[in-house]
Length: 382
Image 1 (cartoon, helix red, strand yellow):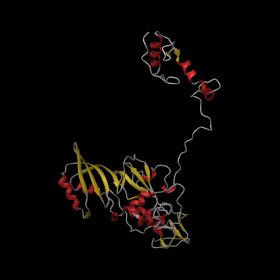
Image 2 (tube, helix red, strand yellow):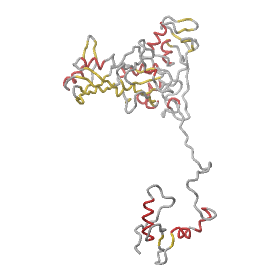
Image 3 (cartoon, helix red, strand yellow):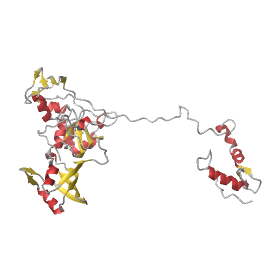
Image 4 (cartoon, helix red, strand yellow):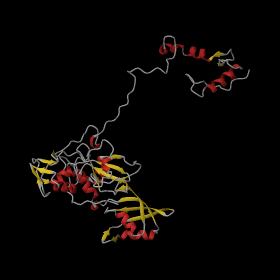
């Protein structure tokens, strides 16, 4: 009789799908016919012994552990509650800080300050919007409706906005958001167009944007709950580079684009240095990478239009150190407070309250943190 070619030990337990073919071949080879039962020699040239009997004989001394009759437990049997495992979903960490160190709210007016600054610190709006709200008669101080933003408030003053008390200031936080095409970066659009803030993911607090992207521009935009932080990040003095991917119709050379490094004046408006690189050509269109630092109103479109290029797609891919990466349109992702603090530097991080005593390794800054005063002004990028 021919010896079986399957000399290895067969797998324990019930064979899975696809294992029946292996089993049939083994049984046919071992028994010399169909339907035979697999047997193995005892290693001494003696009579063949069924493998199951040999296995029980070899492991009989351990039968007490397997059961009263040496039977193996059913592997499909569910584990008892005492030995079952449960996966715990991690809870949110307020402000992105370390576990066990939740960020605390603080009064929006902790020291004498202008009313517009207090409203921005509370996360209601930017300073410029606060001035418009005051002009519209929506803000009152100690029972008197304000007519001018040139008013200083103190910690014990009662400030009402639309009849509601000034909320406590949330810990400063920043989000990356992928703005889709076809929405405007404003809270209220007079033309009734959809806005960024009408389509934010659920769970975000009231936020304001760091700068703006126009209706047809898509890509990265930063959102924050701190108006003072937004004012600082969008200032040209910060020096952060805004980088765009641009598809434009027309033809230019890299030599033409290099001239933009010296800046350009268009219709009486002076634009600063522009970094532009020619990437590829697709039919009548060209793909460019453009970097600007000022972020004036529709700057990229106007500068390229001066070279005879018609921009038909504009995507912001980075704002300073923050990248769009694979963030999907309409999605938002929080920026860790430690990452933001590292980008701002220790002094500004402490002034914006981004580094708590438990997070600050050198422990140089202690006590309450206060926002950093910045200048006014608002621009719309791209």
